[in-house]
Length: 269
Image (cartoon, rainbow, N blue to C red; front, side, top):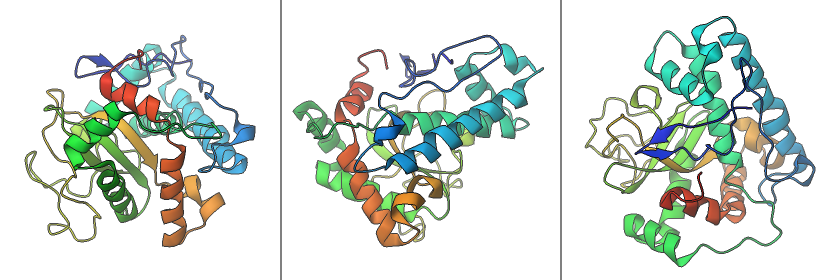
């Protein structure tokens, strides 16, 4: 398995405990819940099987094929991800590594608990400091996600000033490196806001990145939702109403203790 030791803002990545290292071969780590139980109410067992068993395993297998016989073969997973992000000649390697990381990060945000534990006062305060309230955060996050045209990811990330902001990335776009964010507003400067006025089709809000990037041209990922069709098609169909229900159920399935650990940098990620 892969050991993810990626460091952002001098802390271990949220996937440090998810990926483990093994010579020349990366495998998919087990989830903290079973596929047969699903991640309800967000994902049925059938939907989770597609995301985890079909898609995720396919990504990692393809990554192993791409790095076989190359200098990447001996590298830890985080090195494959970050080194390929810096090289425009390693698009396929980056896409598979980044998509696998994003997918795993998304799945580990979810809980299979019958009753969702409420958000702590500490996390509520932290989110409210950036968005005004948790309700505003959820609304703006949903707006950004629905504004994605095509496949991608909607993120809650932290910038170098500790501010929580929203970020949309397309395809396998990653918050780990500016060059690979694959955003719709790549012409914006680091200190501009990508607002609906600038791009009325982006679904972005005043809380959207770009804000101030970390020194290594990255953001710290805190929370994300997959807006790839395979994630919601089985349970929700292709309509906007279906995607709205998907996002509503996403917030009902989030393990807020995991999100809090990422914000506070505790538990070893």
